[in-house]
Length: 112
Image (cartoon, rainbow, N blue to C red; front, side):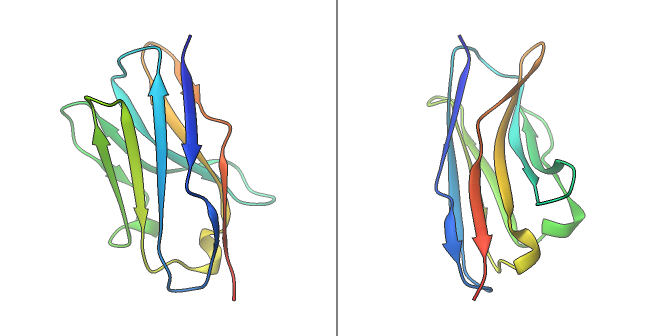
C-alpha cells in the first residue's frame, strides 16, 4: 500500500524559508515531486524529479525553491526560500509508479 506523508508546513513571513518533507512507502517511484493548490485555484505543479532524470520547476518558483530526493530513504524535500504571499497554498507530495499517488497535503501560509 502506497503512502505519502508530508510534514513541514506552517506560517512564515514574506521573505522567509520553509522546508517540506515527504516520506514515501509502498513502492519504488519513477518520479517524485510537489504540487500545490491555492484557495480558489486549480492544483499546479511546483517541482518534479524523475529518478535519474531532469528536474522540472514551475516558472513561478525557479531560483527560490529547490527539490531534492533521498532514494535510499524514499524521501523528497522542498526547500522554499524568499517566500511570497502568493506561495500560500496546500502543498501536496506527488509520486508516480504506473499511476499517480498523492499525499494529504500540508498548508503553507505566507503572511505578515
